[in-house]
Image (cartoon, rainbow, N blue to C red; front, top):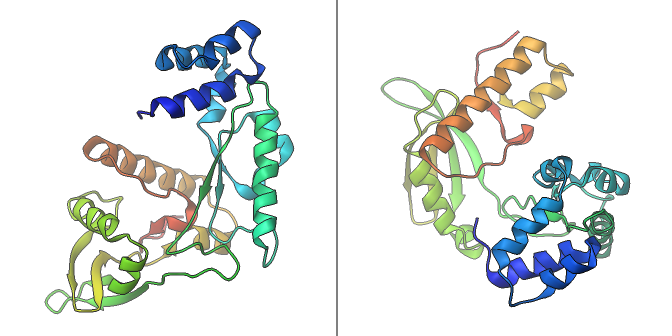
Length: 258
């Protein structure tokens, strides 16, 4: 990942807060080499701090003690996760500020990155606008093969300015051929809607399946982890893509694993 010089300089100044005086002077100088100084900052990090800076945890677990003791680098506001029922904007701001304050109080004072799970709109914010899509079932005439039919409205795609992201998603997923990744069989559209024809995941979300079972057997958990690992190896070997890897977004097929 390439950062702009001004971004590097800002990061360096934040990192320099709790370093020794000589390092602070060197890092604060806009005339010094940014890349070299960033490498110097990394040299001050312990192995635990480097690992923790690459970890993202859910907002509900980002307590002050966790941020301070484990040097967490990123926090995510997951789907349906809120600081309180019908939380006000002020409550959200205060929550993020508290998490950030805890991150900045660590030895190196590195700020955390706050991630927002904004699915079709900021769906965790009370009173926010949500851009909906519908998922139904379809069946092919020749083979009677059941598929999922995802329906997206063009006006909502245009309002949220995600037409490019949708085209890119269709372009990439239409070429994926892996038993651990849902197949995109095709797409079509009419004047108002776009339709994506997807492989049907009969057992639905992994998270809901776990809620029903309470816990998975060792064999079943290992199978899911191995399947996910194979899918990631395949994707990163062929494409550079980002997917939300969490139980709510992982779908499972009809085969029952004991």
